[in-house]
Length: 405
Ligand SMILES: Cc1cc2nc3c(=O)[nH]c(=O)nc-3n(C[C@H](O)[C@H](O)[C@H](O)COP(=O)(O)OP(=O)(O)OC[C@H]3O[C@@H](n4cnc5c(N)ncnc54)[C@H](O)[C@@H]3O)c2cc1C
Image 1 (tube, protein in one colour):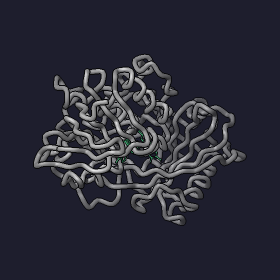
Image 2 (cartoon, protein in one colour):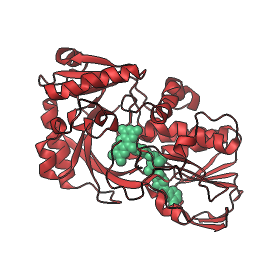
Image 3 (cartoon, rainbow, N blue to C red):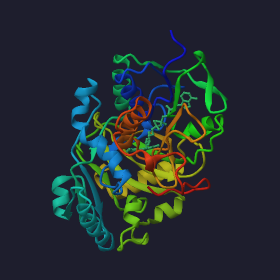
Image 4 (tube, rainbow, N blue to C red):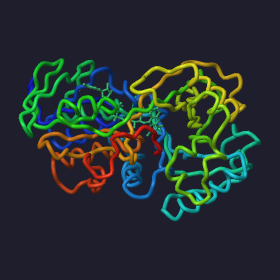
């Protein structure tokens, strides 16, 4: 086995797996190392939303739309079912002050070319029967889609292997040795490697690995906690967001009608975490409820306050879930940047390193990031302009502790 692959990819989340697929199908000899299991990081812990309607016009929306455009054909292209459901997303509100913001949002999004509908309470309940009488309006975006994120990663990885990529789980990259602008060796659990290029796709771990290359990557950790029920009826086909989620988003914060107060809740104040009010039903019938958000650092464990916030907050929002049985809870670390765009590209100081990390909305952005990584390495017309994603772009903040997306 060659220990000198054309490309060594560090990290087997959605970004690493999609990069492996696009590089391998273009003929590169690819070796991907995943320290744990594929999708054991943020990707495998996420809700599976491919959320189009909250992405700002410009590079953010372009990145997700490039994925969304080919999404319905992707199971055939990869040859693997990854639980894709394209039923759309619904953001509901329960007060007139919130509804005013939602109305402006729908008008602005429509002007951006994102297909959106404004629904009144009855229309919202007709579409999503578990919504309670307290819901007075909702937005609906038919482009929002859902995947099973673990199967999503495996699908890219299997397709990459069919194109010749080698993927090793339980195999970490340990140390990167450099000589000026070149990587001379990567010490790994497979032994010493001498790759032609290195793709750093290690999500929230990337800053620690980047330091070995002399890079200070401005990627910060945020803890997100999720609660899962046991499988149950009724069937929820759409992806849901509630009012408490709205205040997290830059696109809402930028509206003339927005102020945070109508979206803040007592329970968030009491428990000291923010609620990304969200619910969807996974393919097995279980509900995924979320999300408690805070900033304890690189912390992958859920806590009682987070579980209490999600269970109490979501039972208040969706009383139809009363009686749902608790199955499990988990936390994940979301890597974020100060402008909510990932870092994709070659750092100035290195000729043979590509950074592909810092993704806030990795399900939508990850597959196109993989394409862009392959374009940057193999050449040709890139899928989209890489300039806005450069790891050393101006304005990125290194001491940035709180995220909006
Ligand atoms: C709870 C939660 C909910 C979320 N919900 C959504 C959502 O609904 N929709 C959405 O789009 N995004 C969501 N996100 C964000 C999304 O999960 C991330 O944007 C995405 O997973 C980032 O993918 P990644 O491949 O960069 O990182 P990861 O999935 O974290 O993968 C990085 C991998 O690198 C590996 N690694 C680390 N160090 C090494 C090493 N030295 N050698 C080898 N391997 C190494 C890790 O084991 C890990 O598997 C959510 C995040 C969380 C935490």
